Length: 580
Image 1 (spheres, rainbow, N blue to C red):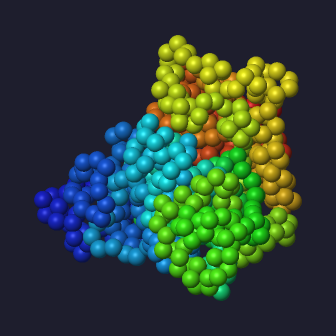
Image 2 (cartoon, rainbow, N blue to C red; image 1 turned 60 degrees about the vertical axis):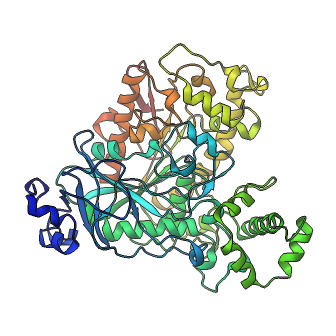
Image 3 (cartoon, rainbow, N blue to C red; image 1 turned 120 degrees about the vertical axis):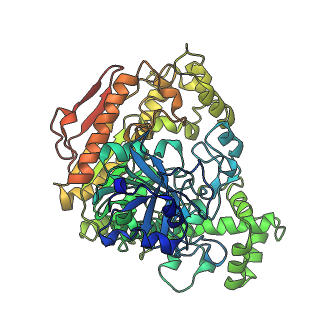
């Protein structure tokens, strides 16, 4: 039975409410030979609705139960299901434990709004407090706990056609593995799903100290649980959900591309070398990242510092020395009970204490992640899948705070950028956003361009190139690479940021129409060129996820294998793409 034939009569409304009656009305699972989703005339569910339900809203019949999504066919040609749990909430006894698969539910579950963001300390790319929609409210969470521990959900978009066995793109967001969220407006998957004729999945995963923590007092004797790689295990659990359920949404479980940007790219590489991902990924897309891991010794030092901060904040100690004496007086069981009993806000606040570095992510524990990941690749012990990788040309310009280049403070900077009208006469100058030491931007010593280029090379290009070189020893015929050069932003952002880290994402997702952290960059003048560039980038991604090769007619050129590179750029009026 096809979706177009399922216009419902009054009796069908009852079928939209009760599981057994829905099944009797032809809403069988994806393996039944029926359409992978059916239209619903009424919805109920476990979560609130972000918009008024419509008679055409799609229901997907999955092994865990029915989920009611959102019909976006008239505006984007897609259906969406948002906030689907792929694991139990990792709270209480499940805090700092591997994820546990979600349990089935009775009755259609509403999947019409994003799930809560994962707990984190608020930053530029964090959610607003209480998961408010993206707005100036984001700045109100800076330096404070935001998000929730109950956050292991994913989102699915697919074209509103009747095709099955569509390629699947699972996107892992960035944010240094300490921040970010799948509901970020940049990651809205509808345009990519429609353009690529693919199923697009975005995921939440535990971040920072909740995602990666190697604390000796939490050890259980189980290698997976003791790895400390809880965020990595969340991503693997999300891939397991996709493998078991994506057919219900019209996807092909045998053609899954795992795509990530920045820390998400680091996670893609981690999944490639993990022995736990067999059969779960078939292609990889790495944007601005590489194979970067943390030694267990370093991770243990961080865990000890976090624990010390907690006991000091609780008044159990007055300084680092007395904190260590207190910790030594407790049994591992007592410490485990103590840290699992702390509120999420208290734990996040301890991680934000002065002197605390960010939680080190992706731990080379020897179980979830090989002890020497590069050696695993050299020995051929990894997922030998086609790789599409890339960098922006000015990655380092997003990290001016690390070298004292930015001004003013984050709160005021966010406000200035959010309120900037890219179609009006410029209201800001380079001097409003950069400290005088780094101006003019093109001076040869300490100019912003020179400093940012050094950051780009050391932080991104060196580890990224090393990762690709290692991969090429095993699969030189399956690696493609690009560089993203577009910087047609209105002044002063064309020089302050330019082809900055992460600005390629709105081009891959075509989310220019969504208010986001990069809204200052997109105006009417540059629209023709950036839309053409976005079309070519999305077409290249579509070709790659379908065929394992990004070559397609929109490029007007042959894309050779790495170490050659395709450069993506555009003027205000047209795309400028070529091998150079």
